[in-house]
Structure formats: C-alpha cells, structure tokens
Amino acid sequence: MNTLAQELLKNFDDLPETEQQALAVEILKRVVNFDVPPLTDEDLVLNAEELFLALDEQETDYE
Image 1 (spheres, rainbow, N blue to C red):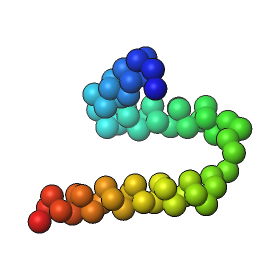
Image 2 (tube, one colour; image 1 turned 135 degrees about the vertical axis):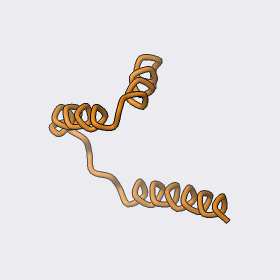
Image 3 (cartoon, one colour; image 1 turned 180 degrees about the vertical axis):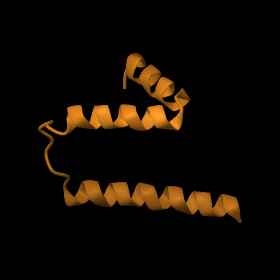
Image 4 (cartoon, rainbow, N blue to C red; image 1 turned 60 degrees about the horizontal axis):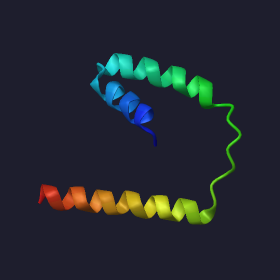
C-alpha cells in the first residue's frame, strides 16, 4: 500500500463514525463492479486462520 492510501486510511479512522459510514458506502458503490477473481479455497483457509489467530490473541488478552 502506498503512502497516499495509508494517509487516506488514517484520515478515515479520524472521522466520526457517521462520516466513516457515509464514506464507506460511497467507496463500496465504486468498487462493486471491480472485476475481482473469486477467492480460492486456499485464500479462504488462510484468511480464516488469520482471523482465528487474532481472536485467540484477543481472548488471551482478556484473561
């Protein structure tokens, strides 16, 4: 991700929640027609693994 994209994300995080939601809707309207190939089973497994590892870490932090 380039510097401009990182700056956009930081600015997004600084917005009030209502503005974040409005901006997210506008971005989704623009990307809905992207020609993105479907995720492979391997992609789904890797993403699930990352998610479960992050959830395990959060759970450990709460204990």
